[in-house]
Length: 65
Image (cartoon, rainbow, N blue to C red):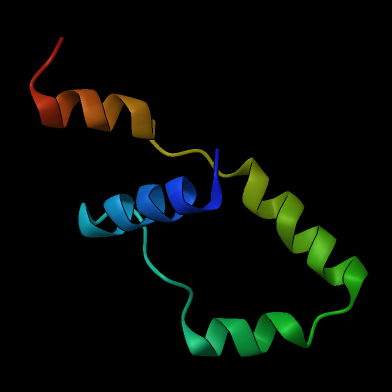
């Protein structure tokens, strides 16, 4: 996926309310972390699962079954 396509996808998700920009405070906190701490945070975030999954939410929003 080209950079422009990625930006359009992110923009579409933000407009749909499915994605929010990172807050300045969160960014400040993240940059202070060591590489090891960042990896721990990344692993914890990777464990998160949402119900229903995003794909299912999109299908429901479209009214498809």
